[in-house]
Length: 230
Image 1: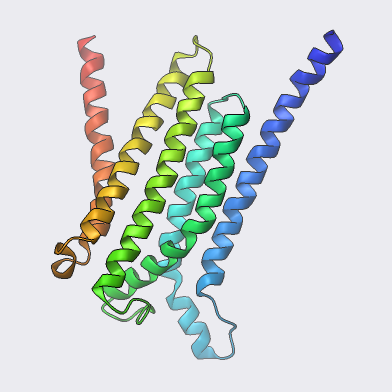
Image 2 (image 1 turned 180 degrees about the horizontal axis):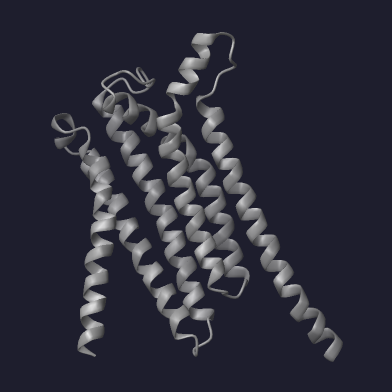
């Protein structure tokens, strides 16, 4: 019996490492897809310049994928139990990120083209405001779905962290709240994208995502005020 317990305790860290390693590799592959989706074989110096001009759009997409990866790493650092629910949610995140790459690349290149005044590549990817609105909606739904998965993942962490670990449970609750806010923001951005306001302000669905850091600051200030009162 003691040998079986010892083997089980040794296998748990190995299972955790295998899950985390698989998720890390999948995120790295998602970054590769982000490059391949907009990449073409270089046949001339002009092709090189075109490829370099795509760097700003790639950087934006890369930053968003890294944001999701850092969130999974933060979940892992809390030391939650790797049960079947955690594995299923992690695999769902991997699948969603790999799908999320495609609308992400379309929006980042189109956005870079718009912000640069047409100097950067991205012309012709979207032919109308209607296509832009639906692309924002698809992106927003993907972003919200991923955010919901992370909220559930940190909820699982909060439920499996030892009751005595108050800091860990507090961190898990804070992350869960942040990703819930992100999920609501993604849906709101998609709704704005399908509203008549898009024609007058095509940047508005993107600006909507600034509600996330603003909301985090407001919630943080409320937490600090509550802590002072207690």
